Length: 296
Ligand SMILES: Nc1ncnc2c1ncn2[C@@H]1O[C@H](COP(=O)(O)OP(=O)(O)OP(=O)(O)O)[C@@H](O)[C@H]1O
Ligand SMILES: [Mg+2]
Image 1 (cartoon, rainbow, N blue to C red):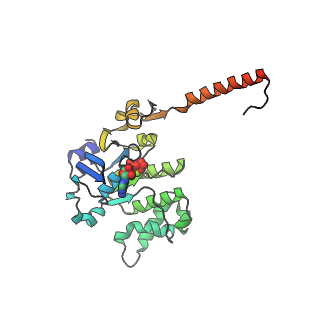
Image 2 (cartoon, protein in one colour):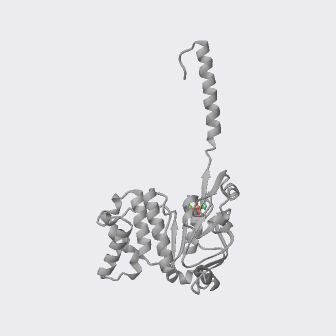
Image 3 (cartoon, helix red, strand yellow):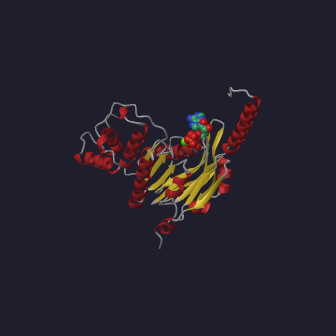
């Protein structure tokens, strides 16, 4: 039997289960009865417009923001203030836009990912593991550098390595590739995908790039106005109509040779730019005809 189907068939016990989640910050309602399951070995990607509550949803699942109503549970534990420290041990969590303004080396920051396991004495094997993690993402050469001196993209990769070091049951990454070049986007997302499948992690990340979401999501959650407006495999739900409904943008969606949707937007300023160009040509012609030499 397909592994994913068998795990889903086990029901919510193995999955991170969210039922009828309501979240409100001040007067802003950011979740209006969301229900979904995130299962081991699957990468789920959340997409949706700016300010729609994606980061708030991750913070709520982590227990940083109190839910108004609903239930979040995993491995027989239901999220509440009482169980918060135990709950958080399930997670490796990389929030959006963290700035590393500390006097620590890259190696020390990666080691902090194992904080729960660290005793007063640092185990040699932990250091080896942290160095291995850096090597696997191609950043071993930065191990002794101060994190203060890193570029934005390098910081993002180091925080990813730190989240990995927790050996999480649930891995949550909020826009983990927003500062990365094409090479490191691929390194991070391939690594995440492989480790999720190898270790049976529940992986959840927010992405804005729909083409990366289409490539790496086993499951997509489309969030808008406090609701999950669509969910499922990218090939089943990423349509021009969905892109229009969610972002108000016209897009072409084709499918590549591997069955992965490819989303291409059109430059909407193109028509206006052509009109302006045409007007300028007309203006220049008129000026030439009237013999005026200064064209502004
Ligand atoms: N602590 C807070 N106090 C007041 N408003 C907040 C707070 N946190 C978030 N908000 C508001 O909640 C809304 C959703 O914010 P959130 O950061 O969850 O959006 P997002 O979907 O992650 O957006 P983006 O794609 O830009 O990261 C925004 O309007 C934001 O201003
Ligand atoms: Mg956000």
